[in-house]
Image 1: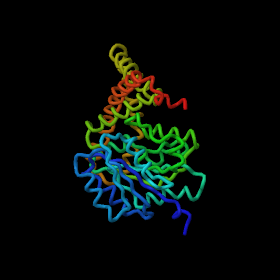
Image 2: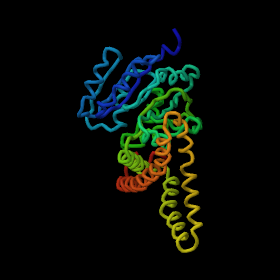
Image 3: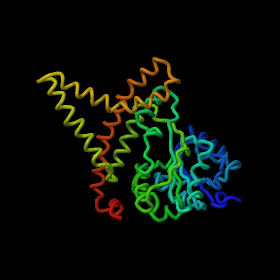
Image 4: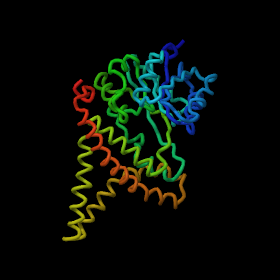
Length: 333
């Protein structure tokens, strides 16, 4: 018996009203080349058929479903991990489709290097329309964009030991979004750089409309404000849109239109990398779809930035109102 088979691996996830997409996750868990020893899913109080669909897989997976109405993502993950029996916890999310060797690749570093406490997997878009292709290329990194020593994994594809989870106090239950970033920061502070498993891939669909994308990025930025994350990035964004852009526009009006060339150049630079990532899908797109995707990139950039600029101060205001809560000062720990 290999050492890998002697370490019990629990896969955990949280779900809420995922009846339309949950089968993709469950089918991909059934198809794993390294089957999970246990699957623990916490439902946050779904009002659709999510839980009955999950329970259909009880004869194909070592499955436990816990229902915790009102639980946020952090609370759900912590509850799932507390209920799990595995020494290694592999986390994923509803709405994803896992590569058949996802779990095999994700847990292998724990055996290859027994001192490993955290392994970063990766995620790729699973687009189903031209809009989703443009969305994925705009907001998601490609593998070549990643610096493994700095990469902070999403909890849709990450594994860690129970010891590591306990050492950092679990996921921050006071935070509704960006909770996995705080968890990652604490893990990295405690245990150093994570092991890297780039082939442990979770595929997921990007947002399929600008409205859904706006809400997503508003919530992410609100979480940044609550958690006091990425101050410089947000400052640069406000400076760009509220100072530099108006100044160059006015200079172009009152002095010379050449100032507008700087605006155009800045926009081209800002969209360059997403346009490069679009070429990964070129063979699957018609010439008209390629033009559509190219045109959508700056629109998606703009909508995302506006959502962030609105959401971030909302999060900061929440943080100020709750400034006396000790858990908000997580950087001091």
